[in-house]
Length: 181
Image 1: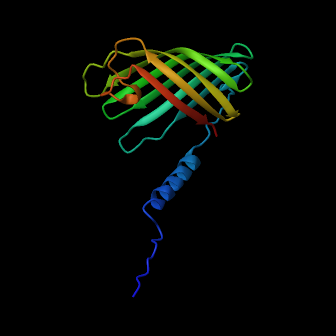
Image 2: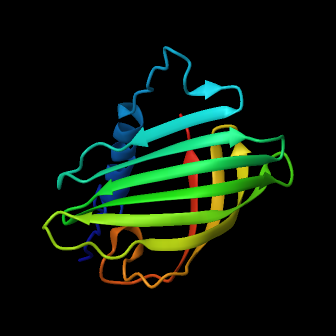
Image 3: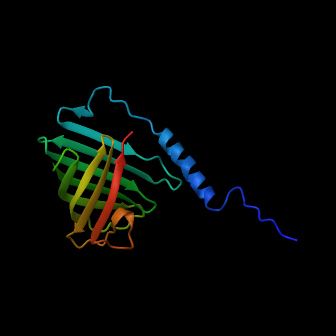
């Protein structure tokens, strides 16, 4: 007598993939474009962008802004800001950067970044994290770019990167991208 092996309809690997796909669809279709009735977001050489994630289960919120000013065809000045609320602290990170286009789509960037925190439990915050940022990016399409960055901390702050309080980060290397829709 031979036993038949029956494959389950949903294997343990398929379920997370299906859930990830549907959660991604919810995230994509839940974003609403913000109207700009006065035309303030793009005026001549100045471009202003902003974004905010919804509140999560633990009341965490993550938002950012970007102010971009074109000095010439090849050179831009950027002011970036990121505000993150976590369970025990709030973080604000800002960077003043120069972006130089080597080609129409490939660019180099460099500047300084400052990160501060405010503790929610009344304890004194750690000293701010100050670093030098450098990197390169590539604009794949008008609404999609990829970027590699290095942030080298030059002060003696014990604050870690991205809200991590337990692991001080004297250097941070990141690879990221942005898809605008």
